[in-house]
Image (cartoon, rainbow, N blue to C red; front, side, top):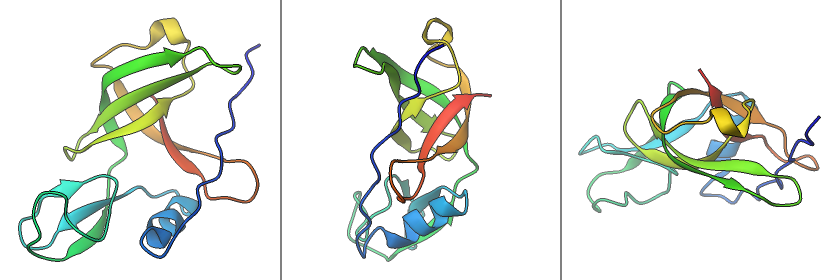
Length: 129
């Protein structure tokens, strides 16, 4: 049986607090520019594409495709990946709930929040769909 990696708890700040509050409710939020409609991850107060419009937080569906991945051979090995969300943005995350040898680029995945150490909010990870 393989040991499960427990990620460190994130430290929310005023610009990320709503994101982490939503994570505690099992929701993944994206940033959307209110003027251009462009989505980005992670959400941040200023749009990374341009400085027009306000950034609003919108829920993601929680589905995506593995764009790239690597197996980290740490004390407790884990799979790190870029997942392209159905909405378009790519996010760095972990792939969980699958043997490493079964993970593939182009594989469909779904969101699953993982508990963190301490009393921190859960972090978004993905498992095969």
